[in-house]
Amino acid sequence: MDSILFWNAVALEADRVAHTDPAKREQNGPILSSRALAIVHLAMYDAYAGVENDPAKFPPYLGVVGVPGTSHRDAVAGAAFTTLSALYRTQRDYFEAQLSGFDKANLSFDFGVVVGNTMLDQRKNDPDARDCGYMVSPARGRHRPDPDNPRQGFYAPFYGAQSLGFAITTRWALDQPPPVSFDKPKSEYETALRQVKARGIMPELMATLRGNSFDDRRTPEQSNVGIFWAYDGAVGLGTPPRLYNQIIRRVAVKQANSEGDNARLFAFVNTAMADAGILAWEQKYCHDFWRPVVGIREHDESFGPAARDAEDAVNNVDNDADPFWLPFGAPSTNTTNKNFTPNFPAYPSGHATFGAAAFQITRLFYEVKDNRGPDDLFDGLSFVSDELNGGNRDNRGTVRPRHVRKWKGGLWDMIFENARSRIFLGVHWIFDAFTLDKDGKPDLGRNVGGVVLGLNIAEDIFASGAGRAPKKTPDGAASPPLTTPAPNTPMPTTPAQPSSAKDCAGSRGGQVGGAVAAEPIQQPYPSGLSRR
Image 1: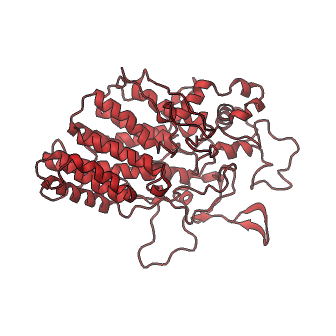
Image 2: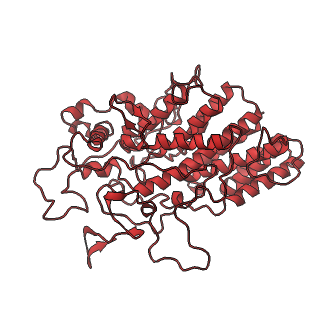
Image 3: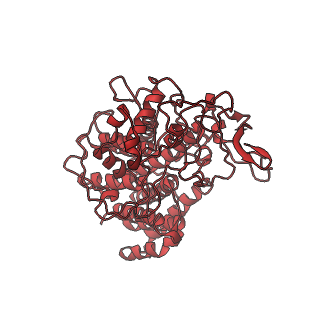
């Protein structure tokens, strides 16, 4: 039995259960689950490397001092059990049940426990996903809640900007997305708006599309792709990092990896996704770009909190605006809840960043010759998404059919299909994933979108680790743009906002001196206009 694959499966099941059982909700959402998976797999790797005792082939991540013994599998078990039990405390009984095939009395198991505790201590000061202190800007183009789910709150606005990296050497950042525009039908932004308006619309509203938009409406295959890659923290499924691990497991088995190969591979994959989560969320809340559900409904200067009563009032709204548009939405699988738009800004796409980071570092691990082209890693393989496994249900209670899928271009094709899938759900703009060249193909030469960000992260981590294993982000390198107040110092009256860190939001306004500018929101309050 391969202990890495065994405990990887246990960790993925923990993620699924944490998003399924209301009494066991821990490490929820994509960034916390990616962080948890990185901690577990780095601990497993270091425990394995300690027993192997060959730094040239298995360089340690932390280099824990101890007596590792001779049992790789028991060291891995000790590290996995320790980290999982700390991260998912309500599932400890399940983890203990998995130890029946391992020797807890073995010296190597004790070494694994020490490694696990050291890894947990290393990340003990990471921020959480709370939105305390986050302030919403009323400016056009800025993120606001899903109007179909207005009390959804905000997921992890400070996490990215305050987190230390796991293995990155550079704080990778993106250029601004295309600027919001009105009455410029050929602009990059309005072209993207028309695309998602047609392809991402709620099925019940598809008949409201007119002209070219109706001709460009979402096809059944595009609906299938959107659902296939979702895993939006759904009941019975968990998060995207679980999905990408499931796929890469298929590759590892096909490649006949040794246990040591898997220790290295899954440490690389999950570390890349953890850093993808950190940098994607830093960029999301720095650029603070609105989702299609807000952008389409307010695609006329007479709509939204930034509209001025006299100057922006009109009687004929922009033809590309639809104040009643709603998306297909991230699927609320296995519940009766409405589909939804995720509760964090659009740019860049988390799916695109996670997927590109995970799949590209896997391609690098297997030394794919074309760094920017198709591969054969999935030749002869197929995959069934849990979203379409013949058992899980949509939010009307209908069981979705089982769908077996393959990719001619391997993981490279997956990177782009996964990224595009979010447009078909109506929750992302195309430039959240990548921009398009004049032929309508992905343009990776521009520093825009989650695919570019994910590729940069994967290549940075792989090169830093010399292709052997993740190397810890050097102290003082890739420092977070926002820092928490030092102990025993007064808390600021208004916390610095993520969008103030690098002025990513730029011309979309709302920033003054690190805090959201006081702008009137056009809603009546007992004391007059609300000021943020």
